[in-house]
Length: 238
Image (cartoon, rainbow, N blue to C red; front, side, top):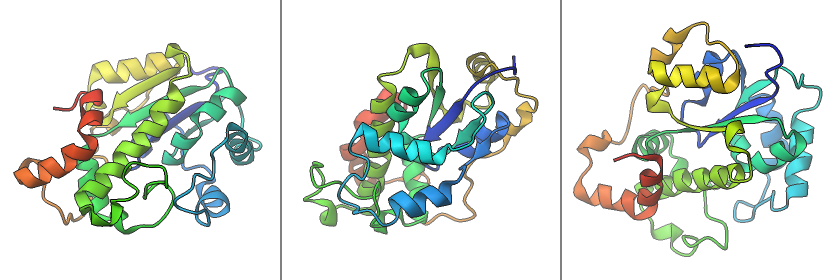
């Protein structure tokens, strides 16, 4: 274990525990993320994919990973969901972990941060998206459910072309379990020195503006399920 683990990338939708995962595995969190956001994301047309070819995605990853140690590099960032295929093409030995979180908990966290009011790539539908025409009439729950569903779809599409032994989908709610931690060590080839970090509550907001999912009304449940119910089933959430 430990020696020559190679490049390990941890990604997710945001608000999905990637920072906790990086801490467990002794990695970075959001390596050069401000540089990449400023250069490629913040000034892009939010309704058009700025990374619509694999050549563009490869270019961004080459830019991001200049000078990294390809034998020991571990990083977590939700931005990687857009570049998984490029990462694999650039480094066929790479390992990638996708962290999933219950979509309703994601919505509650995103709601408090008013992500549904943002107008940036990845937070609003592209022009060819089925929800493009009706976006303005959707509720905040529906909009944040769409963000969760869309980002997971991007990540899963990227993972599809990778060998099974080099990818791992992990529900962050399971991170405290011994079985999960053992699986992480086996997958990464890296010992987790402080397993107690897995007990720390991830993404704990000081305040929420939306009640817990257990207290949602029937109408709120329907709003969410209409947009993201299929993805919830895929990840095994009741």
